[in-house]
Length: 86
Image (cartoon, rainbow, N blue to C red; front, side, top):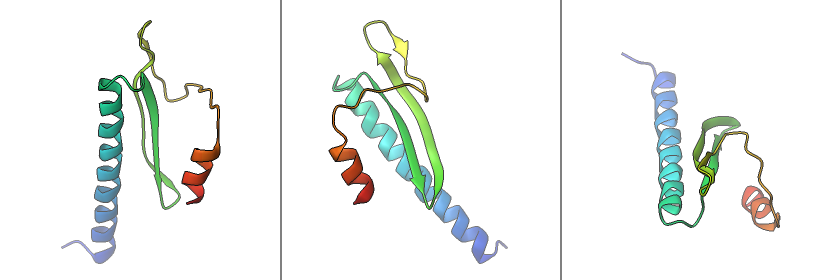
């Protein structure tokens, strides 16, 4: 019989995995609707990375695959900073 710590850790893992999958599906929907060519997903929880994924393309026209270490130009940092702080 698993102890309480193992049960809690398993529950946290499942919640983290569900969050990652939900975010992954949302990004894939944006790719399919041609809102973005691709994205890099990084989900952290309680100071740990619970999911990291490169989705679709850096450039759809040339079919250059997205990489986890792709570099992005960000025109405004107001929204990302507000999201992290909030």
